[in-house]
Image (cartoon, rainbow, N blue to C red; front, side):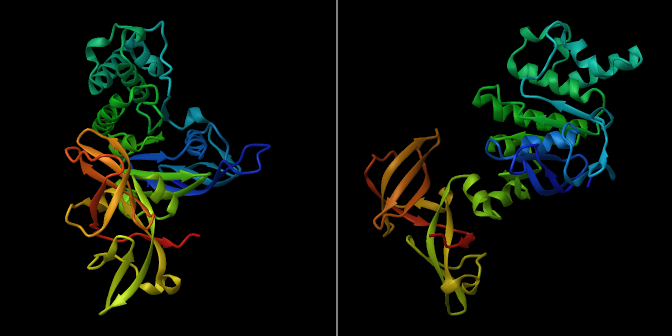
Length: 355
């Protein structure tokens, strides 16, 4: 692993709870990692510790096999060869694009410096803006200039702290895809912080979900969504609810009894012995619930959110259990209307019964 964080602990003076505790993960060279979680979960503190802007109280951080942070070890930030892109871009308003990008390599020979500026501006698609000033650029263009400036000194690691937070929602996901392409073209290793799941899914090879200073899961997007390691990850990623369920053994197969009926022939499912009396909570994603007028199970529409090609329906079963479903938007039903639904689950995600 190029970046290796092991049992990291960061605590601010006067605080009773650590900002980051017992966090471990690794990032391969050329990969993009993303830290995601609610505000105050510790993701920016973790990023600052990797940058060398925060001292660690336990554990260690290694870059390229060399320890840069640990108890009794602290390589200064300026010696880590790390590039940073901030929320506000931090561009110099009195310098044009070319001089902004060249700022970090001002001590390079002039011909080499000019070639590098041209190279990174070409990567970010802004070769024709060299003599324009930041105020003459759109927010997305300013963000790409900041990225080019961070890449210019050839950092061994690039850190991005919510770089799209000042942009409108529609632009964020598109720019995340663009930035991923740029970083891959540059062969850069990067660690990215966001609170936006769509950004995380668009840009990350690996994604870490944080909560209250702890890293709950470090995995690819598919696994986070379909195989969440904790209830928090299951609730934080995507749309879904927990429904009470009972696991029973029938003819050598595990059957899951739920408020939507029995789930059987499921590819992945724990044995009933995994829980006391087989009682558990099963995660039902919105895409596990299918609208089917002929289904015997009916549910009333409590809420509906229009998403263009689909609605996100929040539904209440006759027994009071709430579920969610993605339904094509041409199925435009009224609030309070009862519709047929059925569960279509490939693998079952279960947790210990709560309450």
